[in-house]
Length: 166
Image (cartoon, rainbow, N blue to C red; front, side):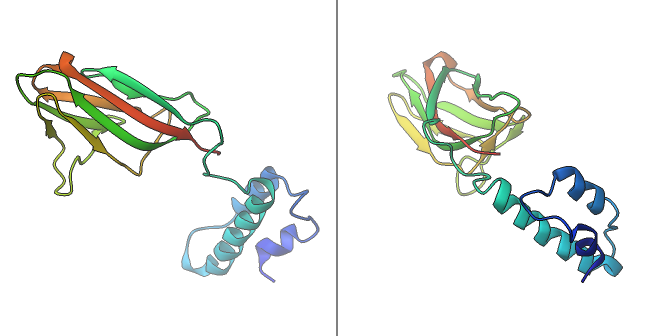
């Protein structure tokens, strides 16, 4: 039995407190001589999580929602205790004259908008463009729309998202 397991052997997973896990785990150094303890610790955390929070990271029912903005704006921001998974995005150019070159940022970092990694794409006059992303938004990483060129007031951006458990 490893030293980590030995320190926690008298506690069942239902009664094990996060402070106990933190106390025991803080004694493990991340070097090669403690690999056995690191693996034991990771298994204990997974086992504890499966008892105390089996739905970690899964969508929360009835929390799906949409939001829309015009022009360059923050499209989605959440509160401190929330994490949102982006389902899909839609960009609509309601103007009839010129394309609008748009982009997205997550926490101020540009996201790739196409398969080639371009950080902007054009939405033609009277056209719409949809994109799906596998990204999460939290309080420190708001999702924002940028307009690189064109008439920003002609652009409406929409997002569909769902909150996840943490």
